[in-house]
Length: 191
Image (cartoon, rainbow, N blue to C red; front, top):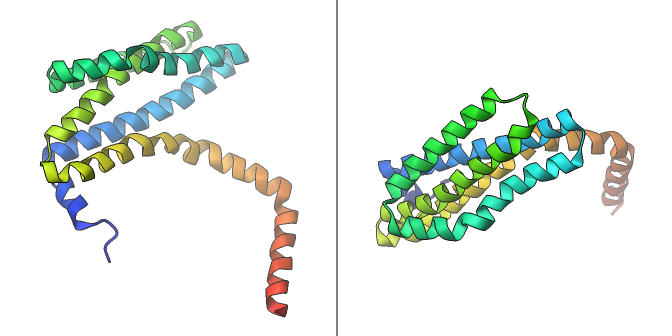
C-alpha cells in the first residue's frame, strides 16, 4: 500500500501544476509565520490588546472587502498576470515590513496591503490550477489545492505555540495524567 496514491503522484508530475502548488504552499507558509510574528511583535512593543486587534483586522478586512473583486478579476484578467502582480506586491510589502521593524504604526497598513495582495493571489491561483490539469483530474487538483492552502496555516501553531502549551499542560497535570494512566493500566491488568 502506498502512502500517496498513484493518481496524486501523476498529477504532481505535471511540472506547471507542481510549480503552482509549490508557490502556493510556500506563500501560505510565509503568510502564517507573518501573521504570528506581526501579532507577537505588536503586542511585545505596545503591550496593548487594542494594537493586536488592529493587526488582526488588517488580516481579515482585505478578504472581506476585496474577495468579490478579486474573484471577478481572476475570471476576466489573465490569471498569470494577476499571480505575478500579486506576488510582486506581496514581495514589496514584505521588504517594507522588514525595513520598518521598529515602526509599530507601519504594521497595520503594511499587513493590510500584504493581505490585499494575497486576496487577489488565491482566486487567480485557484482558477489557474483548474487550467493546468485535465478535466478528469480536476477533483484531485482541487483537493491538493485546498490542502496546500490550508495546511501551512497550522505550521506556526505546531512549531511555536503547541510545544509551549504542551509543556504547560504537562507541568500542571502530569501527576493527574500519570495517576489516570496507572489506574487504567491496573484495571486492565485485573480484568
